[in-house]
Amino acid sequence: MDAKTIEEGRQAAMISYLTLIGLVIAYSMNMEVKNKYAAMHIRQSLGLNIMFYSIAIFVGYFNSWMVSGPFYVFFVVLWTFGFVNAIQREHLPIPLVGDYFQEWFKNF
Image (tube, rainbow, N blue to C red; front, top):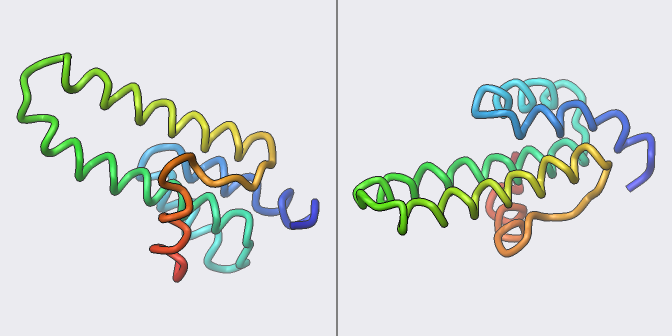
């Protein structure tokens, strides 16, 4: 991926990791000008959000920090990895699950 494409999509890539609202804003920013770099990070963020909320439903039933603590730490680490990659202009998928997100959400 060339530097021009990355620089043009960097803002949308960073915004995509800022909550669900940021994801929607980044998606709408990328609708007019299709940028591969931004689309990659939007797919990563979408996958993280879907995975977080779907697993959080089950983890929420456990009233124990022994269960929910590692869950939140895991997602904070994955989110930080994606956000830092967007800031540093990296084109790396999130560890463990990023390649699946790229495949599942390739239409985004």
